[in-house]
Structure formats: C-alpha cells, structure tokens
Image 1: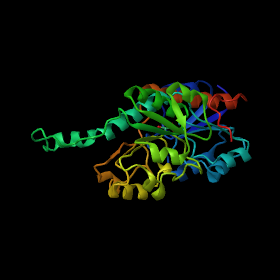
Image 2 (image 1 turned 180 degrees about the horizontal axis):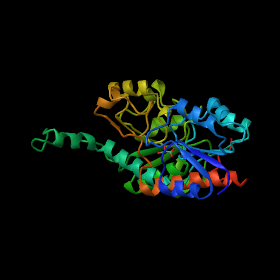
Image 3 (image 1 turned 180 degrees about the vertical axis):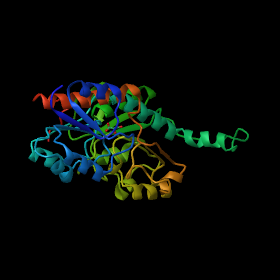
Image 4 (image 1 turned 120 degrees about the vertical axis):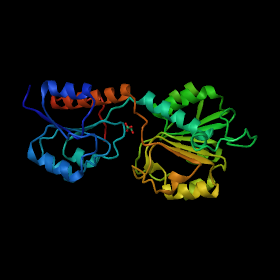
Length: 324
Ligand code: DGY
C-alpha cells in the first residue's frame, strides 16, 4: 500500500475495485446512482487524490478539476465515450484522460444489431400487443416491418464498434454498406463497406446506425434538414451518443413520415423523461443506455479503468489514453 489516493465516483464491479484497493487508499461514492455534482466537488476538496475514476454521468470540468487540485494525475472514465470530460482543461493542467476501449465492442455491437432488428420488425409493438390482449386473429397486414435483405446499410462512425456492427450485419444480405468517418479506413474492405460523405449516407441508406462519439462535428448532425433529405423508409439506430441527433427534429420526422422509425439506446437528455413525445411513439424503440450492460464488459471496463489509474500513478502511459 502506497500513500497514493484514488477517488471513484460510484460503486464499480469488483475486479476494478480490488485492483485499486491492492495498492492505494481508495474512497468511493457508496451508491449505484450518480454522484451529485456538488457532492463530487466537495469531496475532492477533502483529500488530495492522485487519480479520479469517473463515469459517463459525471461532468468533469473546471470546477471539478480545481477542487481536485494540482496533484491529480489522471481522469479515468469507465466508458468508451469521453464527451463528459473537458479535455482542454485536463490538457492545460497536464492531467491524463483515459477511457476503456475494446472491451465493450462486442456488447455494444450485439445490442445495436438487436435494436435494429427490434425496430425493423416492430418487435416492441408485437410484445405489447400480446401483453395487452390486442393479439386477435392472424391478419395479413398487421405489424408488417422491413426486411434487411437487399436493403442498404449506413454506418456513421466506422471505429471498433461501427466495424463490428457491420461485420455482424453483413450476413443479413444488405445490397450495399456505406460508411462515414473522418477519413477512409482500410479495414472497411473486410465488410465491403464503401466510404461516402454524409449526404451520400442519408440519401442512399435504408438503415443508418450511429456509432460515433459526440464531438462538436457530430453534434446534431441528424437534424430537421437531414431528416428531410433521408429516405422516407429510413430507419435510424443510435447507440453512439444521444447528442448526435436533434431529438425535437426526430419527433417531427417520425410524426411527418420523413423517416420510418428510430431505435435509440442513447438519448438527449438521459434519462429521457417518460413524458417525452418519443417515448409514446410506436415507431420509436427506446432503451435505457444499456449497450455495454453485460458482466463481461462491465467487469473488464472497471478493470481497465483501474489499470489506467495505476499506470498514471506509476508514471506509465495508460492503455486507454485519450489523445487531445
Ligand atoms: C461507453 O462506454 O461510452 C458506453 O456508452 C457505456 O455504455
């Protein structure tokens, strides 16, 4: 045990916690719920922590970093996404930022495929019909959905997750797969995906999976104007970040028939209030940000986040380093 100190903003799976507790003094917010911002700020003022292990629900910005003090070496988030961390503020203070890439690729890709199938084949409506006693005689035109076979697929963000979504969806027999990213990537060939620009994606695709990070460039890319230019039968799936889609515009697009349906595992805001118009819409399937909710992923995410803290405290480069 060294005199180094780590603060964790939530209870985390045991493999991560134990790794830190072996060598450091560890304090944590003893709850499964998010730590209130002010509680975090106040807590960080009470001790000089060397590492902060946070969640995607914690806004790590100037006030938090000021409270933490100059000895803080790393902000390690237990997530792939890091849009909740002010990277510039961290860089200005020489604080490393690290995430947990790789270990939730399969879980998020599997959930993306599930959500796409659920939305395309109207599974949510089918399940509620059975539960509410609406299942009557077999009807030729009831709950008819859309087949993947022969359709065009678009992937917005062909990183690890986007690629693995493509790899899983390819055997369904799409006629063409398009992708958008900041540049062409060679591994796209493995799934026969063709690079296109945003316009090409929205004009040509029957299904679009959003698998990117939230950045100033991707924020509200799917908005009123883009929905108008999408195919009327398009189905939009989002397992990246809610902020990539303008939700007010999505409500209108789904109501007006500018697009056919949407499946969202991430929303803006989160949680999405149950009164939000999207929640009641039959052509919108909403899940509660559960892409990486498997024990394999969550244990591994906690472990990597812990290893990232360990590395930074030992003056080594964390494996999940985020370059600013
Ligand atoms: C991530 O790792 O960023 C995911 O959104 C968590 O489920």
